Length: 161
Image (cartoon, rainbow, N blue to C red; front, side):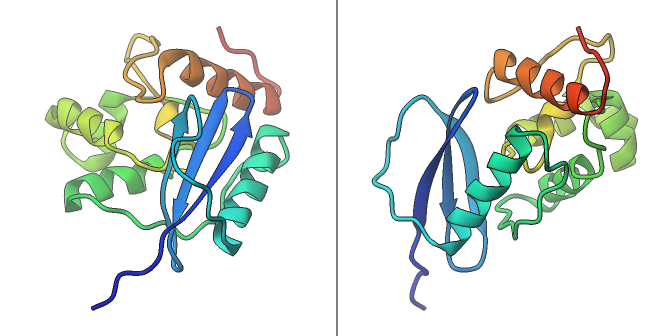
């Protein structure tokens, strides 16, 4: 079986570069980068991702419509599905995420799955915070997490921090 070609593009967000990696059928990953590490080879799908990211950062888009390719265990994929249910501009705790999964004792496991998310912003793992309201555990860095949460709250007419 022949592998599908990969397409790579970069989007300059207000909080750093976002590396967009797709194939013909979906988004493989969207991750923060400090520089462009890979040669760009854009496609229609990378352009769609960039267009939706632009609208998100301008405050015009609250829900993405991008086909995602999820590479992870069944448990991780279930957690990522629950992350997508967190409304724009709102946060939940890791304990709440564990309850959504159906096992309050799975807090560490859901936090680990959260950290394995390869679709920054689109699967909104930045909306998960500590039970005490603290910002913890964001692969993109806590300053980016803070920025994203403030951005979304402001678009909803709320104030955070």
